[in-house]
Image 1 (cartoon, protein in one colour):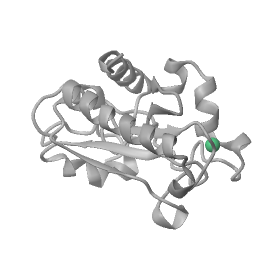
Image 2 (cartoon, rainbow, N blue to C red):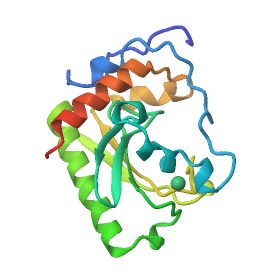
Image 3 (cartoon, helix red, strand yellow):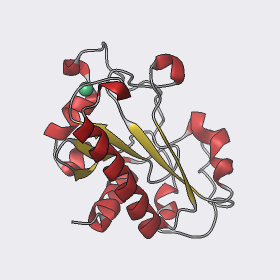
Length: 180
Ligand SMILES: [Zn+2]
C-alpha cells in the first residue's frame, strides 16, 4: 500500500480539485511541524502570517483572522480558519474575531463549492489535545469538503502522501476564486 498512488475511483464526480490529489509520493510525517511547546514563538499558526501566501499556503488574509490550506489535508481543499491572535479556546475570541471566523468560514464554503463542486462539508474545531487538536494552543476552524464516496480516503489517511506542488496549486486555485 505505501507505494501505491491513492486511487481516484470512488472519490465522486470529477471536480477541480481531485486531480490535484493524484500521485502522492511524499511521506506523511505525523507530528511534523508540531510545536515544541504552547508558546506563540513555537506556533506555526503564529508564524504563517509572516510568510508569503505561497510559502505559507495562505488562501486569504482577513483583518482579524486568515484562511490557510491544511498541510495535512483530510481531503483536497481542506482549509483552516485561524485568528491571528494566539488563543486556544473559542470562548477567548473577541466578538469581532468570532464574527470574522464565521464569515471566513462561509466564504471558504462558497469558494470550495464553486471551485470543486463539493457536495458537503465537515466544519468544526477540536478544542484541546484530548479532543484531537493537533496544535491545541492556537484556535483553528476546519473546513473539510466532502464528496460522495470520499470515505474511500479514510483508510489511507495514515499513509497519506502529498506533494507540496499539489498544495501550492490548490492554494492558488482557491485564492483566485476568493471574492475580493
Ligand atoms: Zn499561535
